[in-house]
Length: 374
Image (cartoon, rainbow, N blue to C red; front, side, top):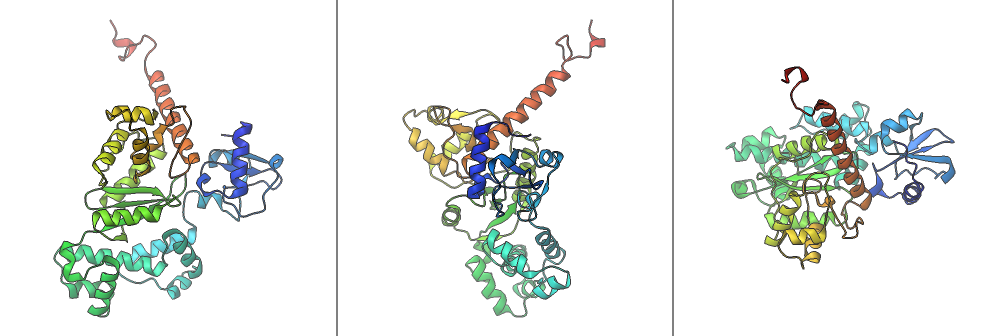
């Protein structure tokens, strides 16, 4: 919808001027003088306040007659990776055990430089390093299921056992001979209406769900690896696949509860706080004081807030449903605008469900069709 609240407009305009990444997906700005629309991080010259209007959804800004900006490409960057990246990833999926070289990318009409920049910006590694991690994950799975080291190395494109062993140890911290005692944390990327997120999982369950621009994300990765005694590699497992599906359903307004298993290492107190967070009903809000009281320790408000901040599984463990005692939004690792969006999204979904239920109930108040009533 079009945003008419002047205070909200001014806040969004300031975010546009500062190119604030935490606002990606929170709004789209239409520029009246050029008929294009952008996201918060657009690098183009900033329009005057009187020449713009804000929208909450892509469909609304398109319906208003605006076309996507060629600089920030809002329909791509707010949700999906660029087309060239999607094409490169498709090539990797087609040949998971073969190397997709720069030469091969050029033959397909894809500029390797663009792919390299995107992977460095979004994964902190090159496209070739990303592929190596995928192959090592495949090798890890095969070794776990009894395949020999020689067959595994050759089938995954390595010319020598020494080269395979070196890469394996560099990625997993142990040699292939030590694989039976190795646990790994698999990491994947998902796009959402609020910007991209990282999902990570062990064999036990999902251990991380965070926006890629979250403050202190690298510290979270290091803490996870230390607590679980496992390296992080780029790959997927069934829990990541399940989490991707459930999050997509959540953002589409089709899911209010998550079922994916979790593996969330932490102190006993943190575990209790995270459990109480999961007990907050969909679309309802609690204060930190109420959370402390639910734990049976009303004086532990600051400790509860601290444990909330240590939650690594955003949205699924819904720390966004906790606000200040005065009703104000406070502390959220993904940014307050994302917290505001999540709260409003859940309230919209709940309102829609209630209205639908109301329409389905006959006017006589019975759940039975009128013609069956005595």
